Image: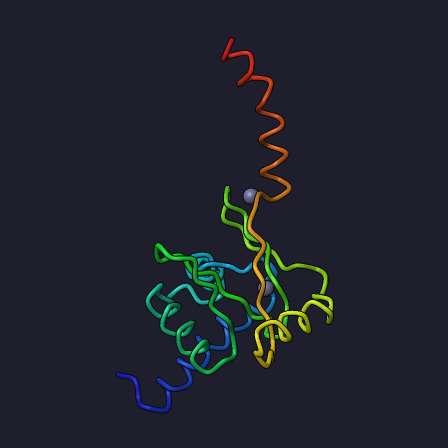
Length: 146
Ligand SMILES: [Zn+2]
Ligand SMILES: [Zn+2]
């Protein structure tokens, strides 16, 4: 039987692990891939525990949840303002390496009378590696269609 304080240590160790995995990854993992990674360090951790910790960290504002419907969420350990690129083909989520020009924010503010604190932009399309795969496949498809 675990005492209260032992339980607490275990819970915070699990939470720290989830947070560490998220902060060290750049590809906005899903709960499942965080779970797979976490098991390498803590084989006894369950998927439910990972979900619980992710929800808790999100509620505390220590991570961001990027929700795309159909129950698919990606998680982001980077809290500074940045924007995302989402691939419609493979579902990957990348950071946009550039910042939004201040003039754009000012333009939006002027046209909407909305005082803007921050912005979260999402660009949706096809990522580089999906694009490459599509180009590689094309000759085959063309041959088949004739
Ligand atoms: Zn893709
Ligand atoms: Zn991000």
